[in-house]
Length: 269
Length: 99
Image 1 (cartoon, one colour):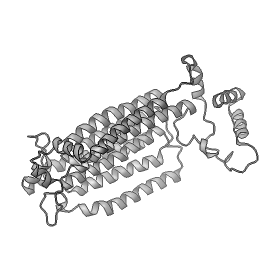
Image 2: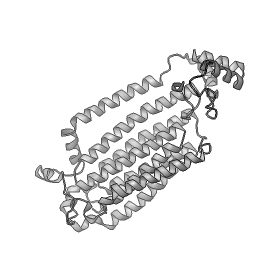
Image 3: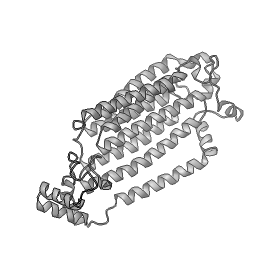
Image 4: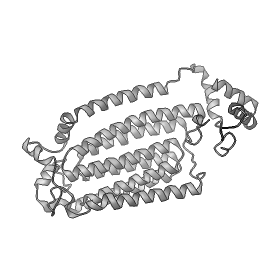
């Protein structure tokens, strides 16, 4: 299980077939701890940093660290895919949207109620404890990795068939599984990507606007939202006799002056 | 390396992402935290694939990445739309369905 790279993906099979004591080398342990600390710290950074761009960059760091963890799990293909798709495509999409919307200085973490914050952190800690107790506990033994040869260890599931096929591990191993047993999900994922692309195009298109209306839209985009989050009681209960539309209009005129209220009507109409 | 360490790390990452989803109100940050959670699950799958020595876990990671990409594409399009209509990406503000 060493990462000394004579074969770039020192495959699972060869490892498992190799001697059993090599199952936990220091290289892997060191790699794991380095990448684990980076991943966890970056994840906490994503949650706590107020600047969204910093958060996105922290997410990139987290994705790269997880990619390193894939490498130490001998999933070289996944590691590359992680960098290409996640750290490349998806994060570029995120940063592009952040740039487009110009929402680089928020946020909102200060406005969250203290009770909400305490409850959220407590819930997360509770879930973490439960997961660590019930889900991690059974797998901390020495025999938890297949081929490590411990007493009552895990048996290698895919190993026997693959050996009979004379299969080499690594990408070919993965590709053979993907294009035989998982062909239908593979095709369906292609369909899903197509649907997502069409949906994004439809959602992002705004046919109601001529190009010279852009200024108006910009003004409208800068308007404050219809209902301030702080005043839910204004139209909150469903049973009032006054129509909610009137209330909202009154609220709007009160808050922003008649001109913007008029503009809002135009926008909603 | 016992596989439990990987499971523990991914459990912690998942919970950090969950706390982020609960705490933050910016829709983009929300999506980033969801990515964090999906990523943690991917790590679990990869660790399980290593544990069993089979390819299935890695195949599942592949599919999860595909689904996450699709989700991000549609979700970010929705966020852009929301921003142009409402002028905000705060998820607490839109309450159209409330009345």
